[in-house]
Length: 122
Image (cartoon, rainbow, N blue to C red; front, side):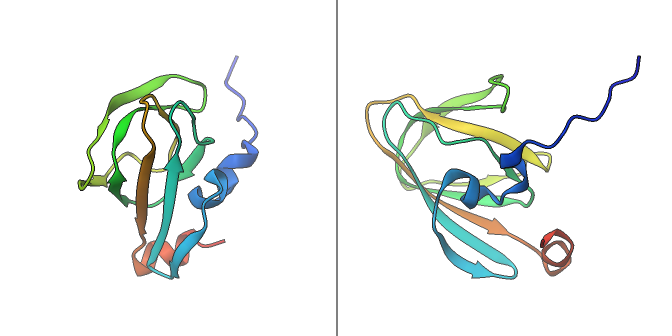
């Protein structure tokens, strides 16, 4: 029996900032930027990254990243003042949970080349 394609989840069709409910601060053809705030003990909804992105940590906390089915991808500490270049295999779908007792605040900067911006725009 072959695997049948699964229907796309409604959240996966959205841009990452739309899925997590963040306001887009920079909306240029090659750069998108938004702020994510995750209170202690809370999670952000699943979302899909289709382009490489940078994460700038404004307020650090412990957390975990999970696949939409709940499978643990990674745990760690986001350290205030650090920047991470995210180079996962794209598209990359996940959700984040703040496992600490302090708020997590991140700036996400999505980088789109002229080619991927044209190809990936809806």
